[in-house]
Amino acid sequence: KLYDIENYSRYADELIKQNDRDYIRYKDKVRFILTAAQEKLDELRAQHPEHDLDWVFEARKIFEESYKRIEELNVPIAGGYLNELLRERKEISLNMLESYYDVASHNDNMNDAKEQAEEARKAGKRRPVFNAAVWNNRLAQYNGKLSGLQKQWAENKSKLEAVVGPVIDRAAVAKKTAASMRNNDDAAVRAANYPGVAEQNGDAYSLLGGENLPEISAYGNGAQ
Image (cartoon, rainbow, N blue to C red; front, side, top):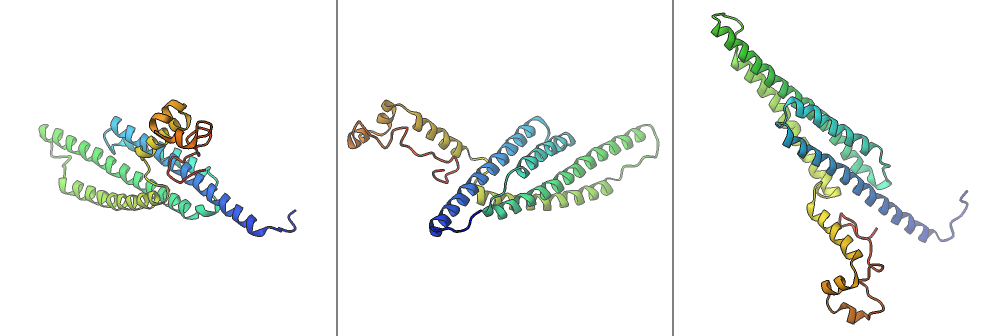
């Protein structure tokens, strides 16, 4: 049990630093999950016509996987707002997927009804009759609802990226790769990249030595 803290100021400083580190790690993990989901959605879009029924079913799997991974994370003290945005993202995406399903299903049903009406016309039958105005009016309602949800999604995405950074940031990946290479380069490569530094610091010790370089976050948050 903790009875007394003699160096409370230092103790408080360490708690703040630990909370900051926890928050940075949490943001990094969230961004990694969101990026993975977005990359899978991009791959899916290349495989299926966008927003048809197959796309909707597969997209739901991708979203559900990201929900699960996010909900498994421990939310730090400073992560309340970000966690709230993630819950909002889940709700919007579920509603949006349902709306995509409504639009895709309606399009399929409309095409089937149109074909049946055309076959009946060719056969000299009076029914079924395809009323384009009715079908298009219902489609407009579905698309209107979807448009509103897409706007909510874009707003939520903007808020999320304001906290964790761009969901897919190739520059950040390149920066991480460059940092890794720099930290592991041999002396000759470092000397080529940073001419004159060895002479300034002496051969025995260099600030650019692999063992002396700080760990660098992929997301630009400084040393961790």
